[in-house]
Structures are given as C-alpha cells and as structure tokens.
Image (cartoon, rainbow, N blue to C red; front, side, top):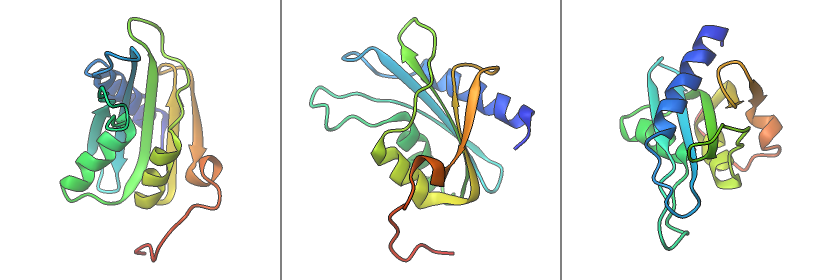
Length: 138
C-alpha cells in the first residue's frame, strides 16, 4: 500500500468515526477496509445498553463488505478516541482480530492511526500470532 492509499483510508475511517453510536463509553471508533477488488467499506462502533450486543467499527466495516459479496480483505485502517477529543492509537480487540484474520488476504495491512500523519502498520500475524482457522479457502 502506498502513502496515498493509507491517507485515504485513514480519512474515510475518521469520517466513519463521526457516525459512532457510543453513548455509554463516549469512545468513538471508525474503520475503513479495502477489499482485494479495490472497493472501500467503512464502519463505526455501535454500542448497546447490554454491552455484549455492542459491535466494533472493524467488524461493522468487514461485515458490510462481506454482505456485499466481498470476502478478500487487503487492508484496514482504524482510528479511535474519546468523543470531541483527539484520536489515539486504537487497536482491534481480540474478536475483531479474529474476524480480520478470517478474511485477510496474504499481505493484508492493518493501519492503526491517530491521524493521517501518525500511524503504525502491522501484519495480521503481528497482531494475532497463531491465528485459528478451520479449512480457510485459498
């Protein structure tokens, strides 16, 4: 991924973050996935009073892509922070890491960003070593 693609994904994730529904934690997260076919999907976190029914931004974005028939994840960018505050490095939770691994193509890039200038890049293997798979399609 080149710098322009990363910047565009971070911008889209930041826009998605503004749509977060986070009345309990006030912690808003946005994500943008780039699929192998070049299409982008965004998602935000959506909290629920029962907490267990809350959905993370990363899963929202991935599930949107999968529901539209895209199943090969090339990259994901994630931004998060307190409402009306600056973003900080916000890493995917364990469940999101497993979902990312389920659909990640070889070489999938995970970008964790504060903004378009401050970001870190990781591989799936770095964030979820020894990933669990059941007969993953090749």
